[in-house]
Length: 390
Image (cartoon, rainbow, N blue to C red; front, side, top):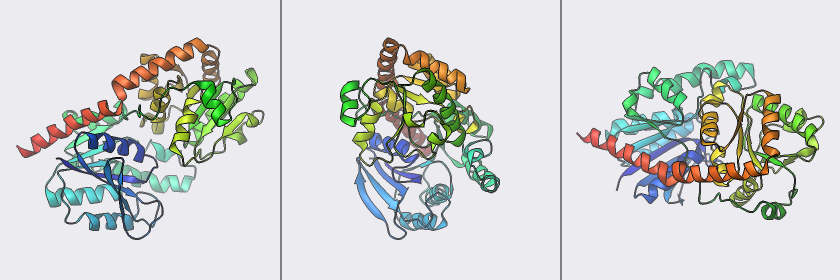
């Protein structure tokens, strides 16, 4: 049995936790023994260790709720002392991740695989921070931790081709890189009868519903609002469904259409999230063509596809390319009017919605389902371990 240490710089059930925990779950089914360290959402002292979807989840104590906390870093290194693993898998390279990883790598003399699934540093998501002082302070810090340690890895996994090229530009060998998309949760997210699930949730039965789940960057929220304002003018019955914790008050940018926004608020019941995704007409992904969005791949796209719902996305990096090439939705420029017109075109063609939704489900089942992605990672791990032992 191969023992793998997963190190994640996110709180439990937030952000990259979803990408990494799903991979851990699927690897566990293949016989791996996964020990997974994530930041506790409440504990400042002491560890909580429990079984979570087939692997061992260790919630590490933190004074700060993010990945630059020295207290969390020190606690992780203390907890890892004396424990044995065969391989380390990190997700990103902020302090709570990279320092414990390098400590274990040196102590046990085992290989390190680093995942890159967000562009945080100069040109990336740090540029989306609204406070200019915080942005100026964090830009060099994020860039340093994002770029400095990449060549210390024995293998690199990347979520898209832009980050693959960035890794190569930093000196990472192309032969040591695996393109690893998110694994789609095809078991929980399933196509459901639209009217039935809307009736269950108390949503308008016949209205076109554009859905967006989770956090959003400021500029993306402004694009969303400007496009929806026009859509609502043309189609007053249209609704914008904001699922879960959406961090920006989109409604204040919608002077004429604020009442057409349905906001669920945070949802603790995962099955309810599944239902809201299934209740949408279209998975709506209005993303600016920014470095932050080019350097990621929204997991929510796969949730809509698994639920058999078509997408309308802006033409950003791998996301726009996939939607276009797989014919699972429509793609627009990151211009509000073009996004609105593209969305209206799909809204007005129910047959095309159904066809693209069916195709999206087929694509995730054959190319992005969790077992498919985990099998690729399994092969990558075995190759690295074989090379390491030579």
